[in-house]
Length: 273
Ligand code: 15L
Image 1 (cartoon, helix red, strand yellow):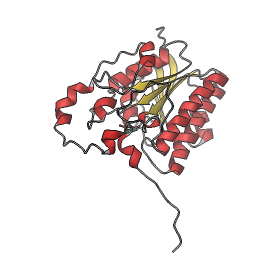
Image 2 (cartoon, rainbow, N blue to C red):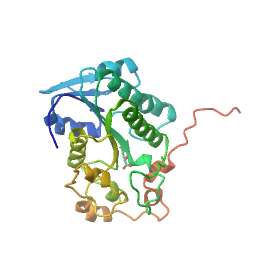
Image 3 (cartoon, rainbow, N blue to C red):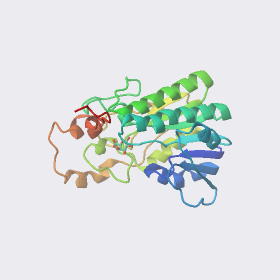
Image 4 (cartoon, rainbow, N blue to C red):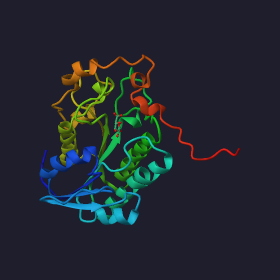
């Protein structure tokens, strides 16, 4: 893997949970890390630039991307929300990112998709990245849309993307479901590094999981990039198995997307009378 440093790497969503991890770990990959979020980012540290930016604002995103040579797009709403909120940050947001990438000659994007693009598969099913998506809500739908964006901007304009369907990236798995979906910050960083520096990736979809023992996903495409995860949820098994066992028909035990499958509907329209 030919590894050069990027001159200026953009990280969106830098104030979020994963953004705060990546703010540190991506730094060696670029001369300057440009950080953006709608939330405050604090003072810029050495080799950082900070920008407050609303992804729904096309002009602002265009300015944000100007001068960057690659993008790690973690920004947007990261949970199930009413469609109107998802529309702004995630659907318009990802369009604005790719349009700005096209206009400013960015050749490589890492796109944070999610397990919720396939959340309505059962936990008993085994998937690979070629299988049809089964989104489990508006958030999951927006991730499917983003995957489509990545595919289209590759076919039409040659912009290459690693789409990572992130499982559950937290310091530790929180429940039985996350024993399957957990992704450590270290492994996420390594997958991003592979996505940024491996030549000729086209549009590749990988599953964002660590080397967990019992998995639902065939991650051959990530392996093809040289991704070899170091961490495993097994380390947390004893503490997770001390939790009460949910009922067999609990959404967290049935669907890959867990409780996201039962969130909503969100109904702002008042019924007269
Ligand atoms: C996600 O996509 C969310 O961003 C994260 O907060 C978790 O809920 C994760 O999925 C998950 O389902 O574990």
